[in-house]
Figure 1 (cartoon, rainbow, N blue to C red):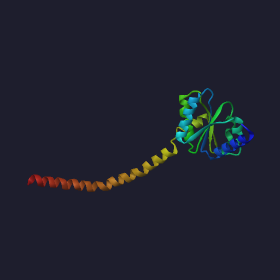
Figure 2 (figure 1 turned 135 degrees about the horizontal axis):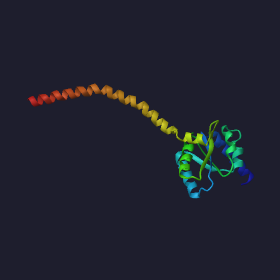
Figure 3 (figure 1 turned 90 degrees about the horizontal axis):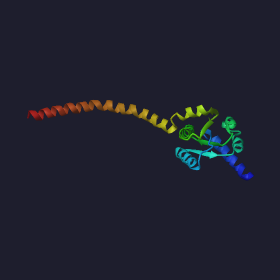
Figure 4 (figure 1 turned 90 degrees about the vertical axis):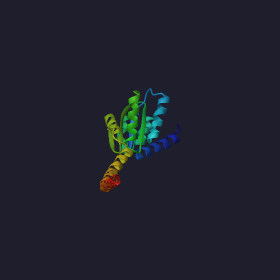
Length: 173
């Protein structure tokens, strides 16, 4: 990599760190190319990104961002997973690490909060923003459905009574 390319990469990575909801750092020594491609595609499908960067460049890119507290994690073969949704990157990395023992979660950050490996794993158990929105929408719709059924119940009961009288009259005739 030439010096200009390195500057451009550091600037791009710095913007990524500033815009991300969460960043996860993990070791990936021994992961095959096919496994890494699978991991990247899973992350992309979920709305996140995985990058492998030189530790020195990543440390430079972290300076001046909220995630600056994770600089010490960059030792050895590290990868960076990030996403705008704070739950997506930890969830995908932890799920992938369960099936592939060569991926070891080191830690990460969510805004100004620095997370250790356990913090990332506990963050991965939380529902994503889309799941929370779905639950909230379900909670909002449920009372409306109940109100509609309560309001409609007397009318349906009256209809059943009228139907029973009509049936009784038909049988009498």
